[in-house]
Image 1 (tube, rainbow, N blue to C red):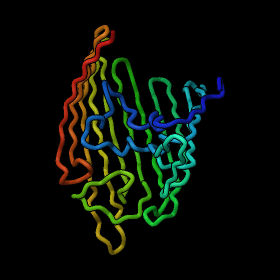
Image 2 (cartoon, one colour; image 1 turned 90 degrees about the vertical axis):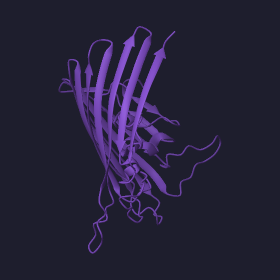
Image 3 (tube, one colour; image 1 turned 90 degrees about the horizontal axis):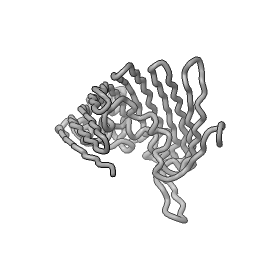
Image 4 (cartoon, helix red, strand yellow; image 1 turned 30 degrees about the horizontal axis):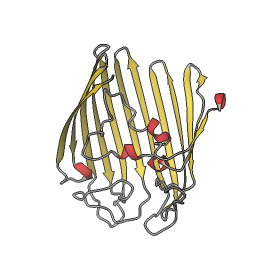
Length: 265
């Protein structure tokens, strides 16, 4: 809409949340891209990926900072796309909405995003779901550093999971909180390297009067990355280590290494 911004809809769009989740500096991919389990931070607002209306405002100048906003609304916030000519109906969720704001200037980039969706009142969904994330990045010359934190509560009303049991975001009964930081360095015009670390804590929320507190579980992911380009050729690599895979104290560790070669003709 020209100077009034953009309105979009579709399937598999990623929604507005992709501008906010895991937005810390990197040489190649997001910290959990090659990890054993996707971080809960990467699922914040994912239900708006399909069948939602998204408004992206134009950028405006406020005191030397460039500011923009993103607004989403989904009448059926299940994150599932219907087939052609079909209608998708969720038995768990009703509508959902979210708001995100970014600001950048003087080497700083800041973003904050919150999303809420209404539950249908079924026995498995005790309350409305809420998810949020924020990040702060700063760059100076060849160096960029960043920090991000997220919160994810799916509103599930189920028994608390044991520390040595696998958990799945959106079906587990507790809440997930992620903290991550990274640093990236442009060695020269061709080579860049980065290191990032994320700690995703699962809290069973079982500390009730007379009850038994279940120990929190921390899944930790560390990623070392490098990217090199020379003309039409690029080589990108990452080595990622994940501890307590699937938020399970007996889930063990996974180490993965990836090397990607790209050629443009």
